[in-house]
Length: 132
Image (cartoon, rainbow, N blue to C red; front, side):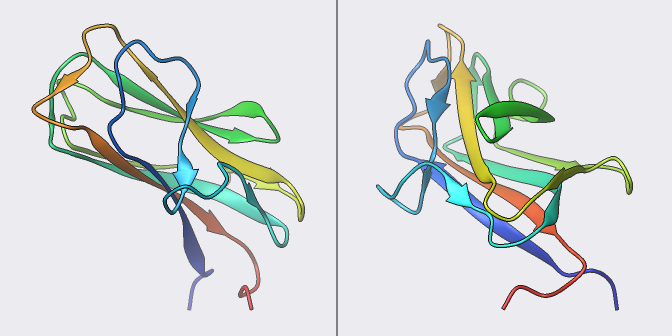
């Protein structure tokens, strides 16, 4: 049996163009930060945009304690509706209990999905023990 992994899900409805550091929220209108309950590693990111993008780019940046990590991804011409990023074993970012996890997005001026752009981003965390 491997190390357990868990998603921390951030989302936002109707993401506008020309944004920098636009914070995603935890489940609806809850705060934009998740306080980690114990030490863990940030191991990946999955994202889904509905409807798919038709122009421009939306870049997602995972932040730890207000600082960008190397865990970033984009909804763009190559990935118009979903993206999966998994860090190689040993390359993940370590986090401690009480650290603040968040996701912000940047959009280009020509960002244009084929309708109202809703985005869901899961930051996957893993640790040596189960959360519980």
